[in-house]
Image 1 (cartoon, rainbow, N blue to C red):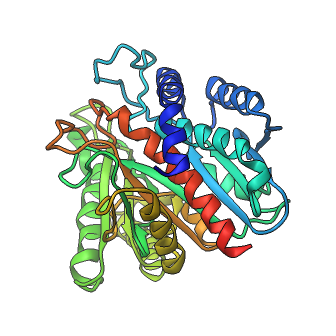
Image 2: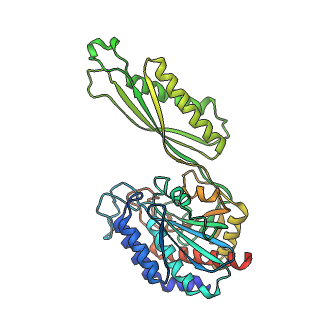
Image 3: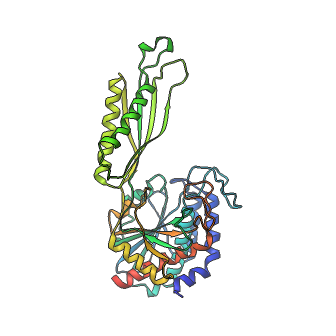
Length: 392
């Protein structure tokens, strides 16, 4: 049996206990005091000297010299009440329903195993425990604060759990070569009209009417301005406006999610949303202010590096437990790391519908097969060691 697979299995109860503790915190964004302190304390107990980077991120290294491979895990939760019914479920109105608690615990165990093997490492492994992935902001904050330097990162690997689908069997590793995830942008349109009493509506400027026409016009971008072969989403997910049924609304706002797998299409969509919002508002005698709240480019895995990681995982796992798959529609802020160095996000199955895990990521009822998590820790470590062996 592969060393890291066997050692991770020996550490399985520690891994599960750490995952459950982080799960119970379910902290959001950059506000991760308990999670950050927990990760820092664990790394110190393993013999590391961790430091804070990028507001609430944690980093440290193992090994010395040679190539530098970065291993990344995200740590934040989602702002939704948990409905899993598990005894360790978060009680603070938040929920680790995207698996970041799993990622953090798996990388901690990988760090422990790599520290045990430090004298045998052919290069350096740098760890990136990242906040605020759900805000699509944490990776950028760590990059801006120097995570890619001192020592300079050569390649980067992330791992994400997959659950609640037909093809997310426990223990399977899947990878994507090329475009892996769509871009993700959040845009707010603030509309200013002029409020008056409904009996004299002709004296006002109806912000809700402007919002309604804007929504319709935005959908026509996809129908008439984007090739049918190009994946793209312009979703108005939130609309607010008005204060009473008998008055013309003086203000309204729209919040929009924009997704595509092309940098050029992403830039085009952002440009057209602004143009349409401002021109529709002007048509109906109002004004519109367009604000880009946050966003992330598409995640593009380096094809050669992704397949290399798949090969290393296949050396460790039973035949058929590693496979290449097609792109996903979700967004992932690991993209800002993979823009700078060859990178790849790989996926660990932690429960399929056939196995009774019927709730996918971002569902408040999501549960995972904790008995599969040790495979993730082993994969982190195996891929790091084998890459350094072959490339240093």
